[in-house]
Length: 281
Image 1 (cartoon, rainbow, N blue to C red):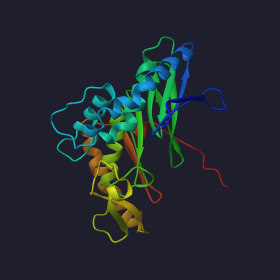
Image 2 (cartoon, rainbow, N blue to C red):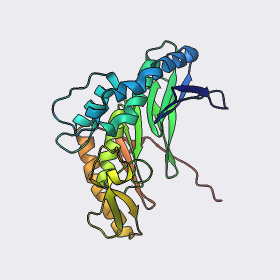
Image 3 (tube, rainbow, N blue to C red):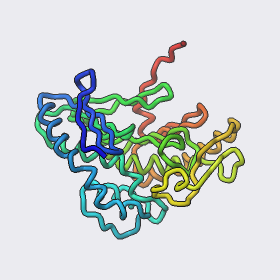
């Protein structure tokens, strides 16, 4: 595996950071931009190794005892441990925690107005009062996040792609105070958007797809055959029930759940959505 790679994208604004499985897009505004990006690169050089050093522990289900030492590993464990005794491993927070760590370095630099660190769709934000950022949520809508909002993290999960899920949600996008918290919640809410034992849902052991999966032999969704509108609604209802519990416990601030063209908006997100004009092809 090659070492950390740093390069600006063709637009000259966004910085691409890559090291093994970590792939970040970073953008910063304000007169402190250049210094903030330099510090982000310095921190990025050792970030992957920090996770690798504690990987054995991070792949285990969370317990009441947290034994991590590194900042990123501790953030991962802390975000996942909130849900104990429910099954989850700190790896559910890895993408979000990585984004948070780079954002925290940028946040400490002077003269930064806004920044985002996008780790494959899990995003950490830096915002000062009076500034805002807009994030695309899909399904024809976006969300405006202001500096006085507590939202500093977004994350998306679903059964497709490398994200392994026990459920069938096309996407679950969560807003939270950190990207690590949003990352775990998106995973767990997505697990609950489900139709247990339904013949249209194809499942297989997680380790059959990825030998090093932290989910081991637990069954994850690998295919979803057509289901009815009523079944779609029932699966989303189950996810919303769990989402409400996350909102009530203060783990998240809002969420968008989607399946088969149906969308549910939960929590503060209902007041932050910006509807987009639907354009015909």
